[in-house]
Image (cartoon, rainbow, N blue to C red):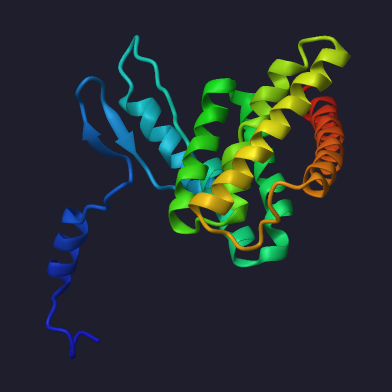
Length: 219
């Protein structure tokens, strides 16, 4: 190979010493606080990142880590639902689990960030039914569900059904009149009846999944 490429071993050593990989513990600003980005995406890279954070942190400083993997996974699911029409409902429902997880583990603020980021990315790339369903219902619903279920059981269901029907109306209006989606059926009693039945099933399933998660992983 050295016969074909006129590069000496000294050149290779110099190149390795001087090479810089962007987005690998890269300091992008110090104003107002030091901000580092890192694109590590496996356990080994995460360990190196943690080591670098510990080494670079000065006494008294606190580290805030922001991870975008949940939003990215959610966007992938919504894009899949856009590409395969029969998966739009199931992909939107599955994507909502990322918001549920973020709500349980990190609180309302970060779960809202997952919802908003994934909605923006997927709607910009594929403005179809799955991202629309997620943006207006499946994404914000876990946040609203946590709020509504602080009330009595009756008022909880009244609030949740009201939220769903308002969201469904918004989805139909945006889908039909702004996005021009032809696979939407319009404002009919059949759509609202079937929608409410599916919503109740979805809510019950979501409640059971949350209960299982708490019992197995949040003891």
